[in-house]
Length: 76
Image 1: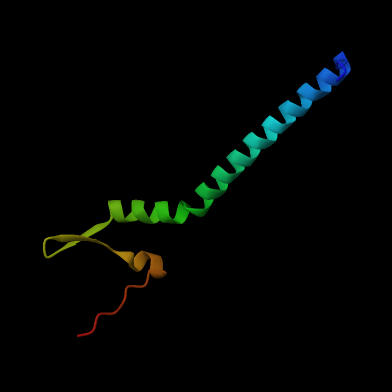
Image 2: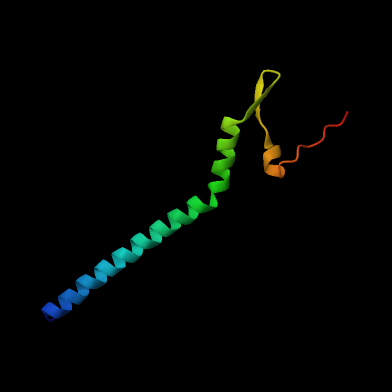
């Protein structure tokens, strides 16, 4: 096996740096995509946390806000 020249060593180092940058980019892209996809679930949890409805000693989440803001008519 022959010794690598300085030029070949530089290109080898650049390839390793490029591979590292691509790996970190893929990781951060996946993390960002996951955060974007779950943003509705997080906002729903936050809504329920701050807008609790208490009935019969229990606390509930009013989900009518997620149905377009129209409350569901109760049967009488």
